[in-house]
Length: 207
Image 1 (spheres, helix red, strand yellow):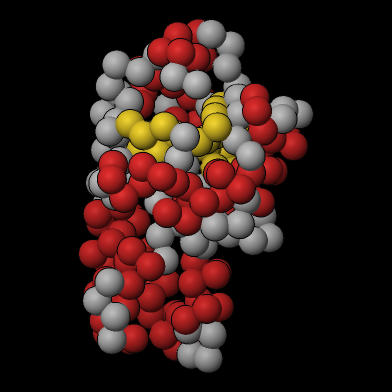
Image 2: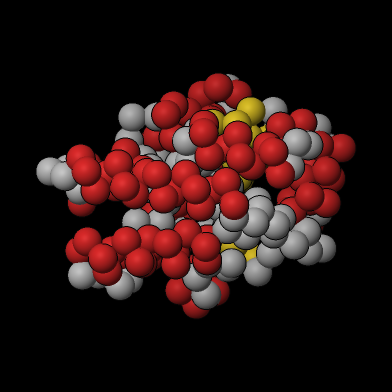
């Protein structure tokens, strides 16, 4: 079983989100590094933790975020399509497990209509009670497919996502697209730069 985060793992969108949230953090909280602080968390959690007392700010951010997600680019992380295709050929079940909501994912499907056929399930932020770094999302994926943690590979890029993967008990691969190899090296079982050259057989030999 393979569980993939979406942003920064399937598609290279994290830099676009980081710039957006850094601007919002600086504008409303005086925090120019806000984007890195909230990576991997659902929008509901971000609002609850940082903007719970201001519905007007929540509304403005939501409107701007919806516009961003309609116009942003959704380029695949190098090698991920080939890797997922190889996993499919070997009968591996796959799911995307993302903190993004269904509305955002509809924009993704417009850019990549083939994505829904590449995996068995897509789990979005509305489907689990606690967002990353809690392991709920990955545990839900395991429950749906009836697999144990030691049968599950998690691919993540953010600190919150990596923590969630490790706490789920899965075998965690850190993807160094958002953070450096050095920064995530001790937060995953293995670290890869991207998916170029990675195959089912190589994956088995790395664990």
